[in-house]
Length: 130
Image (cartoon, rainbow, N blue to C red; front, top):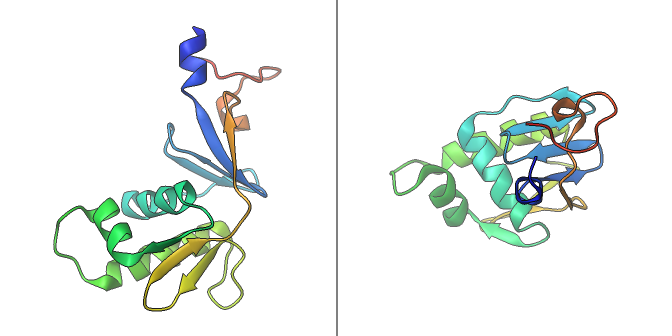
């Protein structure tokens, strides 16, 4: 694979959680955790701005565009994310609620370039394969 293709691939890692934006996959403890596309878009936005508060309007616009939706859809997406991440609203490890404002990803996030999660690698291969 040409080097430029390898340079374009990266994923987020936080504890035993791997989020691969290019493959649209979330893995926790080595298992796939399927997400609805809108919840996945919310997760990516939170990861991109990890540590910062992301307001509800930004999250709604990112995932739902300019469609008129109720705030309940965002609450549902956050609930789905917490379940997939093994998180809790009462004792958050990953997604904290900032009341009346939005949410913050509070886990320690690493962006790992060029190396693929196990489900993208062939045995003995640390780099992404075509």
